[in-house]
Image (cartoon, rainbow, N blue to C red; front, side):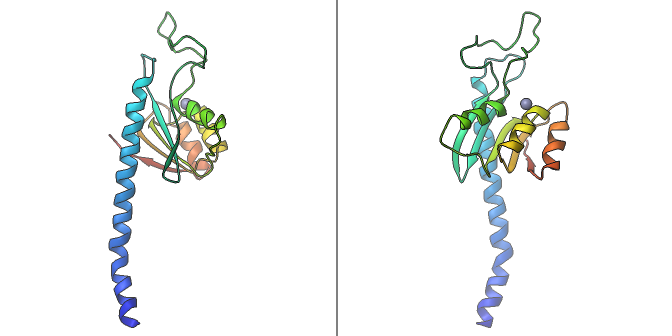
Length: 157
Ligand SMILES: [Zn+2]
């Protein structure tokens, strides 16, 4: 019995380390998927992709673009992003709202760090973790997520 105890205690750090490594590999792969998904965006100034994962299952996806039924053009004649363009996170979250899935406890993978408007949606959708690759020009979205105790992971691709 004593031997078993020592054996398990010795194994624990190795086991934990491998779980961390496994999670990092999974996170990197989902983030790469989000990056590939961003290629769907018609936006010319910036393409952002998002993947929503809950319990090892992809439950939603999104990329930045105009609402359903609108012309697939994000910028106006002055190359300014139209006010009604939805961000990738907003598209992924609202897509879940139309489905039978739940975002409660989910992880959001997004190629750019969320803005303040998307951060509000992330909190209200019950998302518990955000993994992103590029820093958005303003960090107030991340600050809000941290205040809401949402786990943030930054991985450079
Ligand atoms: Zn946003």
